[in-house]
Image (cartoon, rainbow, N blue to C red; front, side, top):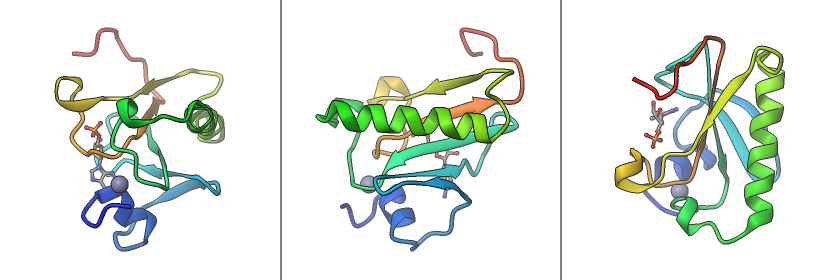
Length: 113
Ligand code: AMP
Ligand code: ZN
């Protein structure tokens, strides 16, 4: 747990969030600044700073499975969606608590602009 970490504070309900799914180990919330009609963040309830810091393969599997379930529940299972994990500075990670972006509801070019 981290005192000031945004995602840890959301887990502790210190900061409000639009929760779309929850398991014993993970939470899925709507991104406050969505870049697509569906933009959900899936993250572990316990503090893990980034993909580099995640030592438990099963936890990664749990998070990716939840991301997929959320995409289907949000109606983009058929049309398709993108999962993104930004890692550390060059990866564009701005909040140091591992999270998977689930983006869908519009076509997305690659590489992103
Ligand atoms: P990243 O740049 O990969 O660390 O992604 C951080 C994401 O968190 C960005 O897409 C932000 O829009 C999002 N974000 C920041 N603050 C909040 C918040 N209070 N609730 C939900 N999403 C947030
Ligand atoms: Zn945290």
